[in-house]
Image 1 (cartoon, rainbow, N blue to C red):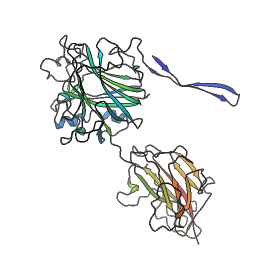
Image 2 (cartoon, rainbow, N blue to C red):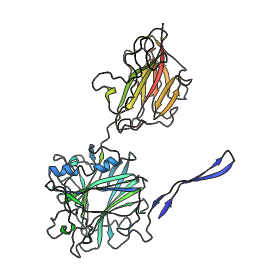
Image 3 (cartoon, rainbow, N blue to C red):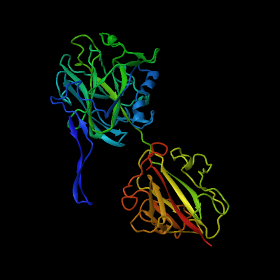
Image 4 (cartoon, helix red, strand yellow):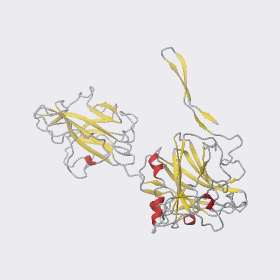
Length: 505
């Protein structure tokens, strides 16, 4: 076992002493004699999600296959029925290749490149990542209506007019060559979670056949945790009783049509690694046969299909409210109009109706009651990225209303209050480089994204310009505006800023 700790040091200014710090450790398993199949040391950071099997390629069973990944998707924070885009595209619009595809890690929220190889492992050997030469085998990308051997597709990746492609290997190696096939996926950076649907992956764990294995590795081929056996449990086929428990003693045989143990069925195989160390994923074939000499998996094969969730583009929504009159955020002192309640504009499907706004967040009034010359009006602009995609170059502009003038110095000695990610920033209204906010005229708006002002705006009209994202000035480090994953989540996907004007004589 390799124990890995981060270390550091600093000088304590109170006693001028050199002090050190050591992080908590993370571990990987390194077998002194390589990676014997089925061995390793368990790792609590690895949580596998391996489903039951589904057989028969009909509408009902394809719908069932679509549910096999639900628990994994919940664990990684995705909806259980997301829109999917096949890793390998479709028959009419291919993407990736038989040796390469792009994968979006749902936990890290980044996209990584994945190399795909068919490898072999000697049954009695200890190779960790296998041997890359597989004689006589040529994996393909298939667009047939089912996965290998009539294993059903998931309904979300079934389209009879333009089938999504899947990776397929049917050679299975030479009988009695004492090598087991495996698919090896190598990621160009460590991942936190991964999963795919696998068709016709035979496996047996009752001592008479050979279990299929999920193996996780670091980039240097150190095994992470123990090899994970794919255990036959229950089988769905769309017919009562459904599901039925698998009796492994009935698996295998010369008819090649016995139920369960992976034969002609599809299951979901996945994991989550809370330590984000996995850079290689290997799936090793098993065997459902029981006959001696034909049960060691040296002539078996597999297929798989997978997809990334389709991420909706960024969608910036804006809601403006009056939140104070003469410094009173409870009510307008002129006529007691409440200012501390959440108000909707009663327009169907407007920006304030989106369900990703936090509860009771959009406080303030649209019609705030009576004002008179000399009154101070506080405006609050709420903003949210209600899409899933990250937004860049986010600029919000607000014209100062006619017969009103901007008031300075009301927010911590500065002019504008910005709240985002649970942090409050007091910003200036001048172009000073300290922040990304400025009150300018229409004709002198700072260089950057378009304000999209109304055509009726005059060149001399005052306009408040706030760049939510940027590489200079406050708020520091906020270069991108993340998308929302649900109501009020994450807290960096929404915020507000407020400023005050005076009603002129």
